[in-house]
Amino acid sequence: QKEVEQDPGPLSVPEGAIVSLNCTYSNSAFQYFMWYRQYSRKGPELLMYTYSSGNKEDGRFTAQVDKSSKYISLFIRDSQPSDSATYLCAMSVGPIGSARQLTFGSGTQLTVLP
Amino acid sequence: DARVTQTPRHKVTEMGQEVTMRCQPILGHNTVFWYRQTMMQGLELLAYFRNRAPLDDSGMPKDRFSAEMPDATLATLKIQPSEPRDSAVYFCASGLAGLRTDTQYFGPGTRLTVL
Image (cartoon, rainbow over all chains, first blue to last red; front, side):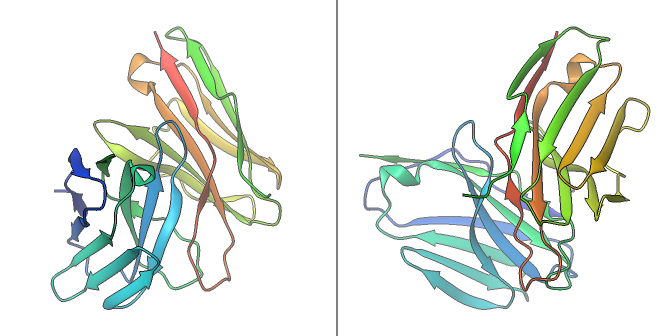
């Protein structure tokens, strides 16, 4: 079993929909949680970063972490066709700023239809 | 606009040939990561360096893969001999230890096809 599990999708939604992307993990040592977005034939780019349980909001994006359930989510409000990409969750044991290795989920492919 | 660069962007080679991929991390970053991405396995860490010294290369098949940082501006990943199962996209990423973040900045990748 992988340390980080992510539903690969594909997920297809109409423009304007609320999108929910999720990851579960088994390693309780993970303390820092990230979401990366990867457009086709590009490298992943950081979208959201959080290190505590609860919600973090950035524009149309909300990252949610529940450490007790070992479950993280990314919500996208008012989804746009430009949000069509693969979304990867990533986790680190830290400590913060140690630039240690990340463990990635397998990615969820999202398509937002106009 | 600081970014990680990788060369070549695409490489097609025959089984048994040597492949060398190069990465230029963001200037000033002290940590460099090599990842491999496939449909089946997703994004896997192969190795990473801190201040040019290898910290972890446990994800790398040692018999055919090698990674080095000849200087702070260049990281290389070499496969010798290459095999069809090495076909994947290889990403380099860089980061800076010491900040209150673990952000890694990825390059555009090298798409390798081994025939």
